[in-house]
Length: 82
Image (cartoon, rainbow, N blue to C red; front, side):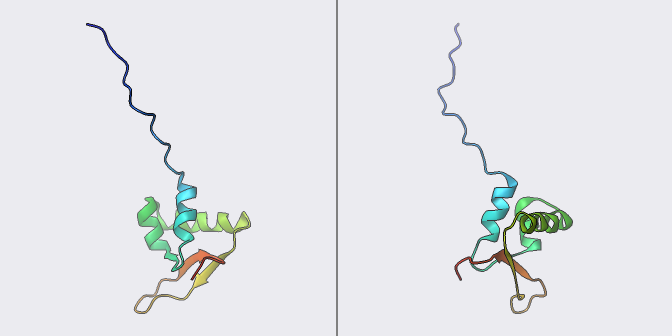
């Protein structure tokens, strides 16, 4: 019996966590640290550190007021469409 190679297309590389973070923070409504942590699978302090690294890289982040009934601030990239 001879083996044949699979003809499956190569898997598309998934976006890096940093790219995912940037996409999530660029939404018009912004996103909380808790939501980011849940979506990225990071701890809260890791998520906050990543936001700090974005600022250090020259990306302007806006800190938005908490949504009504919430105490958590939301973050978004400055200039994201409202």
